[in-house]
Amino acid sequence: MGGFALLTCIAVLAFVCKEAQLADPLLLSRVLTVSFIAATCFLLVKHFIKVMVPLFLRANMCGRDINKRGTPAGERPIPEPLGLIPAAVYILVLCALHLVGDHNGDARLYTAAMACVTFMTLLGFADDVLDLKWRYKLVLPFIASMPLLVNYTGVTTVVMPPASGRLVDLGLGYYLYMSLLSIFCTNAINIYAGINGLEAGQSVVIGIFVLIHNALNINPTVPKDNIELLRAHHAFSMDMMIPFVAVTLGLLVHNWYPSRVFVGDTFCYFAGMTFAMAAILGHYALTLLLFFLPQIFNFLYSVPQLFGIVPCPRHRLPTFNQETGKLEAVKSHLNLVNLVLWITGPMTERALCVLLLVLQVVCCCGGLAVRGFVLTLISK
Image (tube, rainbow, N blue to C red):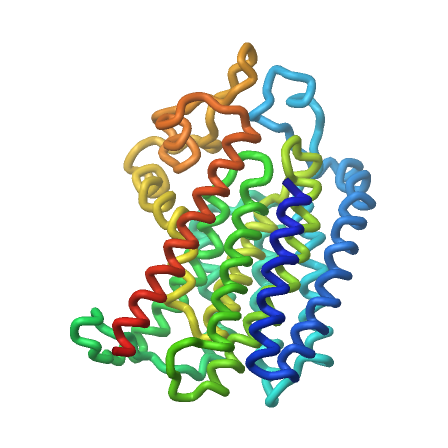
């Protein structure tokens, strides 16, 4: 799976480079520079996770794989949270982008991005170590989003249904939406988790589709009022997303089934805030939700347990059948992982993760199609 994901990312990067060349040769140079940095980051993360594993085990920062309980693999300690490594490397990338990526005086955007990602990485690591209560997980992402909101200089209008094409200015309401988006993204990946490779895998898929969306907007097929500003916004987003996908791929190599490391809440919060940060500062905060359709459904389906309406266990995982070696649904655990198992029947953990990632791909493709259809109607 790691090799297939890597080849897919290379193909998407080639598409991004093609669109960048058609838009502006200078933009192609920028993409190639960031891609070189990202490739280096992939190798660094892949290497340093292997180096850091003994240190995490020595510090007793490890857990057991509940989905393999009763087997030798279920008794082996697995280091956690190794999501700290890609997050740390990514923060160093944001520092480097201040030097090579300050285009049109947008260094303040890189500073805002670095502040938000650093804050959420710290919160995630604190959660892994201290097991924070849910109220902190809701309040602190809002505080972490402040640099994003302060540096947002885009419009606060939304287009009503295409039949009317009317613009409505939400004003402060749009800022509220962006802060709620930050809270949602940082928690959405965290509650859609629990099997080997799912957290890192869904992040790679979403990151790939964000890059495709960026590429389509730097060289749009429909007329745009201010094409240079649009390209600047999506070029900034590509600066954020290309290294993110690279460091996440480095983590996925070790986290894919059978997982040798756990990503922890550190990675989930880091990934969620990175998506929110890139979308807000890249001016596509509404479009981002089209790539989070499985996460949105998982959240809505989980609401009764998340808000205490029905009992919520600490781990809402499927149950492992030692005789068949397959995971079976627990109907009282209200999340998408168990729902898929309830619909399909028992599956191996690897097959279940692949199916959920295919579902993510299908939903992201649908999101892109919906956005393209709406834009076509509006432009008429």
